[in-house]
Length: 313
Image (cartoon, rainbow, N blue to C red; front, side):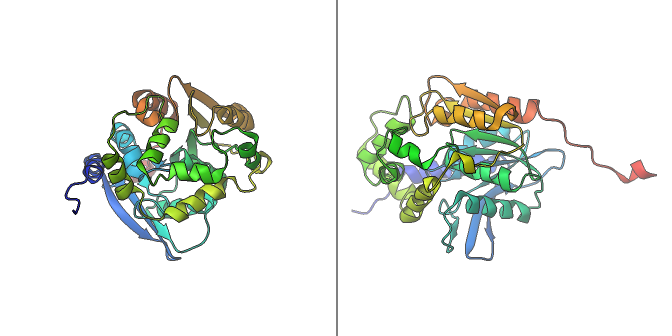
C-alpha cells in the first residue's frame, strides 16, 4: 500500500514556512564546477544590520536545525542558512570531501550574495566548516561560534577510546541511521532525555524523507573528518570565538571543548550548558539563544555608519 501521508514531510513544510515568515527566501547557486548550493537568504538585506551565517551539522537539512534560531535572531541580523554539500538540495560532482572544500563552497555562495563580512555560527559538523572558513577567510569572518564541534580531535582519539564508538564506520552507521533501532540509538547519543514512545513507522518515515539521498557521500564526509587529523596541524584563528558545549555530550565529549579553548587561548571563551548533550539546540534553545545574543549582538561593536553625500559637502 502506498504511503499517503508523511509526518516528516509535514514537519519539514512547517520549518520551511517558519523560515519564510522570518524574512528568508530559498535560492540555488550554481558554482560552475559541478557544485550547486542551496541557501536561505534575506528577502531584503538591510545595510544597517550585520550578516550572520548559520552552518548546520549532520542530520536532516539546515531548516530542521536552525528554524528556531532564525526566528529569534532575524530582528538583529541579515541571516544566511546554507545546506552543505550533500544535504538538502546541495550537491557536487567533485570528489573532495574535506571541510575546507565545504568552507570554500559556502564562501562562494556568500560572495555571490555580495556578503563580504559576516559572523558565523557552526553546529557540530558545521563547526568544522565554520572553523575552516575562519582560517581560510580571516578578513570575512568577524566573529565565530563553535557549537559542540570537535575540531580539535585527532585520528588517534578514536582508537584511544575517547568516543563511545569503536571506529568511524560505527559512527557513520549511527549518524546516518537506516533502521528505526539505529535512529533510537542516535537519539540516545544526542539527547540527555531522548523522546520516548516514537513508533517505528514515524522513525522510518523520517529516515525515508530526510536521509535517503547521498548516504555514501555523507559517510565519506565523516571519514574525511578524522583521517590523518592532528591538533598540531589545526591553525590558530584570530577572531573572537565562543565555544558552546553540552556537559553530557556523547558525540564530541567535553574534553574536546577544553582542548579547543587551550588551543585558542585568551581569544576564546567557553560556555558549558548544564544537563544537556549534543542536541542542546533542541534541549536548551533559550539558553543557547542567550549566549548567542550576548556574544554576537550585545558584545559586538556597532557597524560603521554609512557615509552619505551630505557628509562630503
